[in-house]
Image (cartoon, rainbow, N blue to C red; front, top):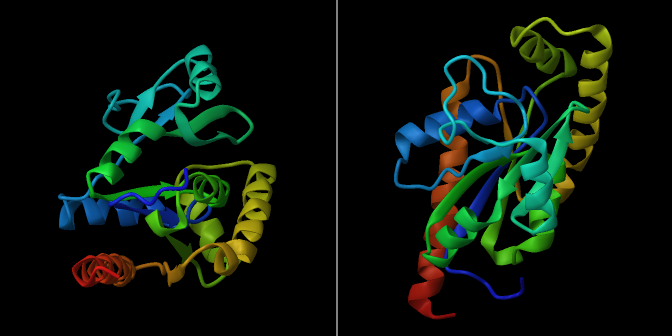
Length: 205
């Protein structure tokens, strides 16, 4: 897609455990006027999860059909098991209407989306952590994981951290017990980018 669209997609990027979901949850409360599209996944719903609220839950055959028919902006197999992907239509429709869209993705998803959408329509914000142990602690809080799984996730995280400054437009520290500061910085970036776009439109440049 070559033609620039009126809206902007802000990608909150980072490895598992870095705090992407937490930042999104706070932004939803602060800025309910933004669009927050949800993923499609083949994993089974957990207790209390409703289809269309946290995820669109589909079976494997349906997901693979969506891939074949080009219905996804990006997708990946997570933890060598389940498909997760970003639906194309809700995001494109919102961007065509000039809306602000917020979406969390890993580095692979970020790069895939950057290849599909015009550069002017995508702003990527990479969340960083101060050290490896901090990320390990966050991952382990989600549930006890085997040592091999922790190692695999950390190797993946290392690759993402190495690319963060190169691939993404901004980097924001995501520190333990300082969620508000992180969200403040992310929101400030979004506001700055939106203001810059409005000024650009007014000036007609």
